[in-house]
Length: 378
Picture 1: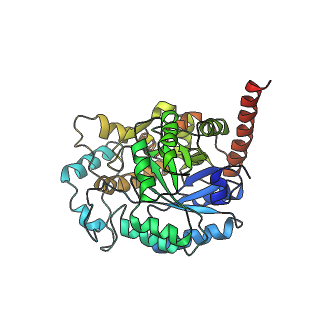
Picture 2: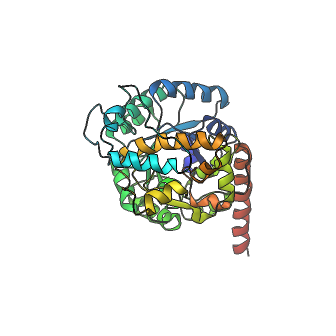
Picture 3: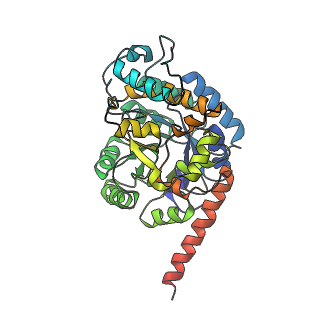
């Protein structure tokens, strides 16, 4: 076990945290000595029970965590019992028409799908807290939240169960607010990251956050954003990080939830192909550039992305239709295929197993440390 506070807090050998929406990746990383974190944003209490039960049966007793997404700022903030179907009525017709015509140009049929009348809105805080209630029936060792300070109830849940609460931050002032609210672990996520991200680079953000929160106590900081190998991990820890939080690197593993077509596009992509766009969720989120991102960000005739969570109502059905068409042999649809991915995509050159990626992180980390030691050797 490395001498890192993260290793001690989470009971792991190597301070490599892997965020994934795929249970197979989570289990594989934890078994290999890292720490898998299951992304539960789209789950209900019923489905999370199934997923965590599977992880428990396949993780060989190793620790793992869970991540939810409870946005601090959302267009439906303060409203109670908002349903998916009630939100669909708020989506302007021009946005529906624009999406239908866009996909139609590529031979893809698009319709907003019918949902159960009681299905909660995307990113619903009440649902997320109920998901956490179920999660605490399992041996989870971490809960994490993105897009703002976790609600008070979430922090209290963590303290009640003796489970650290982590939160993602993209600026040093956000880090200070998180620590003041009672968060136990900070994830300093640079703009290079996939998914929702800010504008400050990892190289600048990590030392900024470490310095800003140092007077507030011993709150470990995990570096995130563009980290794809052990050498980058060593560099982040040299800047004061206690470990790293990674995401995009696991999308190119055999266990990942991504489609074969998207993996092929990742391998072919450069770092500049990972762009920040509001076209998927309504908030700036880094993803692989495609016809979809260009349409919402660059097309003068675009009506513009809606606020979160309304844009997600449009994009969910759109990407389901895109992926079905592409996998069904529609070659035009490939130009629309996209997913959340960071600038580190330029470092992906092949598909590997998650366990192999963990091992390579360890080996490269040691090589980097030895290299630095040789630079200062007498």
